[in-house]
Image 1: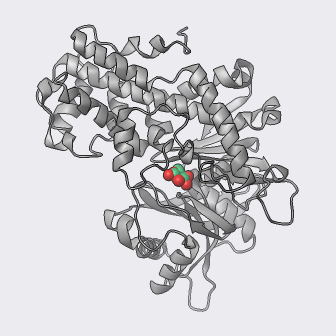
Image 2 (image 1 turned 120 degrees about the vertical axis):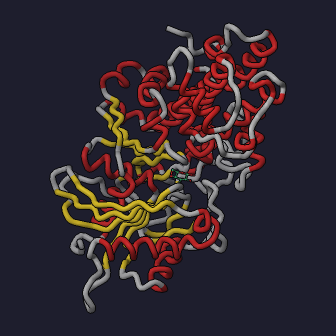
Image 3 (image 1 turned 180 degrees about the vertical axis):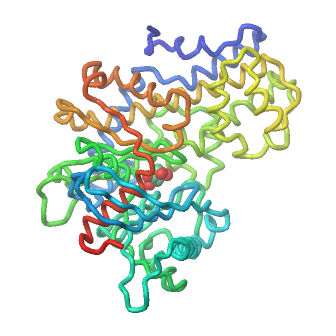
Amino acid sequence: MADTNDINTFIEPYLVPDGSKELNENLKSMAASFAVTDDKIREIIIGFHESMKTGLDHDDDNALPMIPTFVRGRPTGKEKGTYLALDLGGTNLRVCQVTLNGDTTYSLVQQKFTITQEAKESHLWDFIAECVGVFLEEHGLIPAPGERTIPCGYTFSFPIFQTSISSGNLSMWNKSFTVPNSVGRDVVNLTQSAFQRHHVPVEVVAVLNDTVGTLMTSGYSHPDTQMGIIFGTGTNAAYWERMENISKWKGEDRTGEMVVNLEWGAFDNATRVLPYTMHDNKLNRKSPNHGLQVFEKMISGLFLGEVARNAILSLVDQRLVFEGQSSEIMNKSYTFDTAYMSQIVADDSSDLHVVKTVLESTLDILPTTLTDRLVVKNVCGMIGTRGVRLSAAAMSAVLLARPELMESEISVGIDGSMYQFYPNFEQDLYKVSRVFLGEDFVDNRLKLHLAKDGSGVGAAIVAMTVDRDRSI
Ligand code: BGC
């Protein structure tokens, strides 16, 4: 087995046999800069623990936000009823009618709306109201005059500081959203006002982060779920914490547990521990939330392709690939989609024809040699591997924060495009975590589950617990 504490393990696989000395020297230093050795992960886990502890104690810009979510009851699998759920993600808005069958199973009818650039920059609240209106209309859910409004659970995939189960102030935008006049304001209020303007008869009874939704959905089918994670366009996690550890909680009842939203994308905003490369710094400097969400920028789908584009272009500029020629498409930010990385890394053909198609047909780079394609595959591999190792580091850190739970079986609910589509992501999460969580625990007691559509279903579960007798 490769020694994952030896930096050469992260360099040798990425050198190219037919490449020039100069090319391989460059690949070598690039691979070293993206390497995350076991010792580095240990350092990251310590950093996570310190930051979690501070964040549970008080709000601190340099620590993890550790947001109390007001969610205190674990799902039992017996919840029953039909609820409306809204799931505002980074790419899509999903409107769902969720039926919880009361026997750990559920079904849902959903409609997905791609969030337009205009909505991301300005008219988000009206856009949401319009989409919900369309859904109610198309599914015959508009209540008759005099009938009560429809209760709804609302998953909001951005950081909000919750003030109750049904209200929360937006702390900042990320994932390239920049809707004005929203930061610091209650997102439920903003949405509810748009419903009123558009005569949409819906009342938001619960608002939750998508990781909380994922945790609840997974808990509905697997009651031993302790953690919900999103590895998607963005990344984050929520877990069950004992109330006595949430020192900053000002509420009266300090017994039992509450779900805490870590907002782990913000880990190391003070830039002390993570392995930053010049390609990360370039991305960070040009992003609207410069200096924030630095961990997210190393592991989530919105950003990995852009880090890879920066790294590949650095080789182009030194005339080490593509004969020094880029293309108009490749020169534009965010054109190298993370989905291409997944296709490229998975291409095991001898002529790397999938890589060729992505480079030549999609990105308009002409012509490529086999060495060019191998270099691109290797650069994507280095960045993807770093992402998976950092993802495993974060998951391990959170589980290690409650070691008593690791004596029994634990389920972790996970959703998101990286987890679903990046080659071997789940397998590598298990593999990397074994080193830090122990082989016995990972092989015998840790279960990672895809909580597909978790955020929508979770919203319905939380809405139900808030509003037990008002299903639609
Ligand atoms: C947001 C989190 C969210 C995560 C996954 C991050 O950008 O800050 O609130 O849970 O993305 O969608």
